[in-house]
Length: 371
Image (cartoon, rainbow, N blue to C red; front, side, top):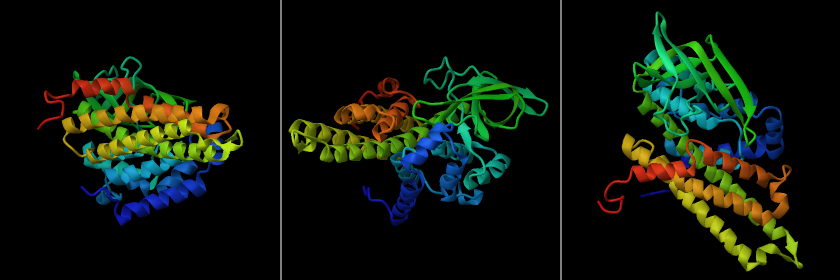
């Protein structure tokens, strides 16, 4: 199999990397974090590159690209630890493209592609942990369509989003709905998350909603899998920069008159960090390549990838802090922000132990060893 990127994919990577390096430096990121954790201006700059339409068909005003292009973009945004939740744009556009009725696609997909609208997934409930089939939100039919009553937690940029993808119980099974921000009965309470980004509690009280599909659990699993693939790629970008900054520090920090990079024990630890990074990169590729596979195969792949990424993120982040010493945990130094981002990513869409359980449950009798 050829794992080389095409010229178009390399050009896409170069465009995003240039924006991150020139337009989203550490100083700007800290300013955005200090003022709430989300910048509509920065998000618009991302979509001005055409990235909002990455997963949207050309007929709906998008670029009609696929998971590999999404992976390339998320890696580069990870390198800049970008706070704006572009992964949610991939989730929203991917799910609306796949499940929404034609009139909903026509209304929302061009807005997402242009950056006019940010649509995010609001699925997490307090009692559910990471189990997608546990949903207490309730939907009911009304004369004009449907209404929802729900409380969803840790909604990315929830107090800035323009619409929400919300799973809820309808006639005894989970369905998936679209809720526009301007609908009656919506309340959001925003807060800063550990990595400096923005989250919110979302409360719906008899809120008008648009039904996307009655096969809500399948759509929700698909949405989370898109999010996991994007997250894995983002984490690779974060770890790549974490390792690079650590190596640079070791080449300049001196002890006993020599650079600490000359100490064999520390070089071995850096080699282990590099190994974990490359394991994570290969599993990120695997996740992206399996994103369009049949649902069962896709779900197994995402659990495997997220488990390995969780192991790698924890190892690389902790080793980077240890190798930097005290400066590694100070807010003024970028490594502490890489570490917090990796910690946040490890907990998103299911932590490492959850996905270890998922891998175990989805093992077949051969455990994938024999045909």
